[in-house]
Image (cartoon, rainbow over all chains, first blue to last red; front, side, top):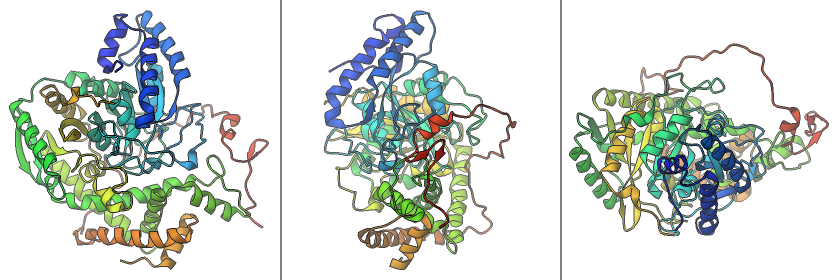
Length: 482
Length: 95
């Protein structure tokens, strides 16, 4: 077992000169070499450039400068553009794509001296809930190698859970950070829509996508948010709200907090062990001083349909850019149309094609009002329901997923069954509010996650709830043995 | 809700995606099944409910029209499947 430290622990060690960033980075690169054959979380390992960056970070720290992320080994989901480093989206379409620029979040991480050790595997173009839709290879859950790590940010969740990186970035369109965080027993935050710049994030569904951190604890989550949050001229949907110091909201108790428990998240198809873990979590939150109350979000059952109309519709438009001309896979056909259709036919995997087809249908003449606009209207009702709930409650408590991680291959032939594994996380993206998943127990050694949902720009509140719960429990200290 | 083979081919053409015979059959079944499940939306009363395109109430964000540096052509063309001099090479559009 190599060293496995949090950002705040590693940062203290670096500042006290107990370890150098180069040594720390070597430790993590060694760990990657050791566990990667089992978990397969990484598409690209950037060992050489990581050591160069670590060297620079050591100089920064020696000069008394830097931030808590300086010199910290981090893994980046392969949907975030990294200048000069292949960014595949785990897609055949982008297998050889090397971005000529950095995403806004990468500029920020690089500026503070974070050390990228690799790019992580994901469901192709972030479409999926298990990382099985990667066109490259399947990633394994470190808690049980026969099971999925969740998705689509499965590689990032595994990198943190298996100790291949101190922390990671993911992206979340319908649960893609929180669900794998729950499945791998790490912390994952989907920030408010517009809180983090999407510049340089390969687009899936632009009204739902957000970048966020995957970390070993909530303190680390706050530290990462301090670095990546903020508006950006190049993303006109990023919001010019001031960025607080998120670590300041982390308190040990929840006195005076009102937490809602939406009953629609605790029914159909929920595994009994998850229900039991949630019951215990509710009790713990009450012990910490919070007041819990069952409440209702009656439009929740429609969220799945709303999501799977809106997300594929936006995806079908966003993915129209892959035409084999400017970058990416290209089929050399005899005519322009043949080239384009075969490029897209061969270059996209089954789930991506399924969603492009679904979205194209929902947007097509004669169906646009009945499907797409209807879904957008129901979206309004879901959003209003959350707005009303946050008039009364500081945060809402739900399971992150209705089940523990499922077996690899179990749901690949049934798209609807796969889609249902995100049933607790989808509504949060529809409403644009923030949600965090925090480790909340185990069933036969398999992780269970608890989701805390807040109002728009309520990240501080949900981190406070997640942190108080985390500190009062031991779940986040358990490590997968691999 | 049943999508016919013709409808699947029509959508595939709109999306410019070549499908194999096997995919046509599979997508026809799977998309029909999904749409059937999504029909629950029609039960929701949305009279006088406006559509939401963006969840955080942001109005149009404007910025100054400032001149700034673009990426070097060489960096952009480095990813081109086919190029000729400083251009992307494409198939004839008009024949």
